Amino acid sequence: MKDEKRIYTEPHPDEPVERLIMEPGPEDEVTDRYDQVDTAGFAGIPLFRVVHAPRHPMQTDAQDLVSRRDLEQYYLDLSALRHLAHRAANELGFPARCARPACRRAHACVSDRDENDWSFPGPWMPPCAGTYRLVDRIRGHMRAKAGLVNGDGDA
Image (cartoon, rainbow, N blue to C red):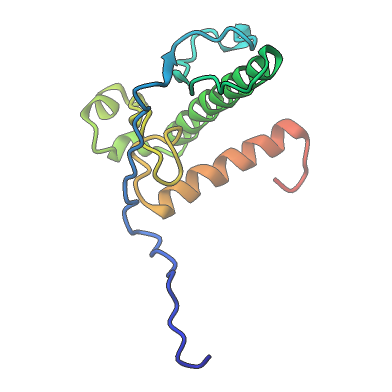
């Protein structure tokens, strides 16, 4: 056991995040429609496209409906996280040193990662958070804001 090598090493906080692109398959349905969940509270917030896998031949109509609703809720939650992450990036002053000219010109976080970029932490994080340290700063700021909303005293 002494000579056992450690396979995984913790990344350095300032190490760039390695990209992982996962494209939808040719059989997948990619849509902008949210038919099973209510998006009324998301007016003005850009929503992720929903990727539905083909229906399994053994699925009943009810099972397919639940599967579609769960996926739509998942992508709606990702959209909410992206919106909150952009707000956190703005409040932390990230646009001033963002590599994207659009963000610097707008003095606001206006850029998005590719929807197919599933590298850590996922497509909901702004592209200016390209290192583990910056991702942690945004996540910490989001947790603090969530604590204020929930009424937690030590957020």
